[in-house]
Image (cartoon, rainbow, N blue to C red):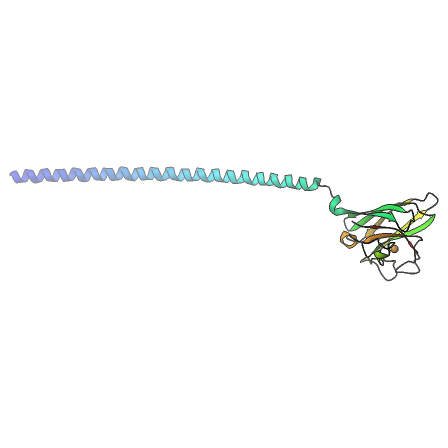
Amino acid sequence: MRNFWMIAALCAGAFTITACSEGDQQQAEEAMEDAQTTAEQAMDDAGDAADEAMTEAGESMDDMDDAADEAMAEEPAADSNQVTATLEEVDGSGVSGQVEFTAMGEDIQVYAEASGLAAGKHAFHVHANGDCGDNAQAAGPHLKFPSDGDDDIHGNLGEFNVADSGSDNELITLSGLSMDVIRGKAVVVHEKGNDHSSPPVGAAGGRIACGVIN
Ligand SMILES: [Cu+2]
């Protein structure tokens, strides 16, 4: 009989321990679920924050691009789009002037002015060498523009046409010509106008002014 109570007490103890540990396990599982939910919410929040940060960063990049575009547009174009030849007298001719070449899309606009000229026509051309030495003989023959044919006067820029004032200015447009073709060459002014019956040189006579294009 004494043994029975001992066994019963042991059994009760064992039952309690088992029940307790089952309760603990359930609590632990609930705690785990809560923790998991909290962690998932935190991940979502972090994801949203990251998305917002990315969007803001993208917008500020766009702003920077816009600012860069504006800076480009305001930059003066003179450096790459315009070159000039300063004409100086040759062999004491007293003729001087300036020729400005401005790139306009596919064309080049040429503004030329000269003074000290005798009355009449004076052809001026782009010559092949950027050298006005030896009374402008070092400038060499005419430069052939890509558009020049056999019947054209090569490298022709036109003519100054002077009454009795001794000066003239001309505005000419050259089509299909790039600045790279003329940069570093020379402009030579001649004593006479072009003779279109004798291409490609034009028989315009002596050289009276010269300037290198740069
Ligand atoms: Cu010439």
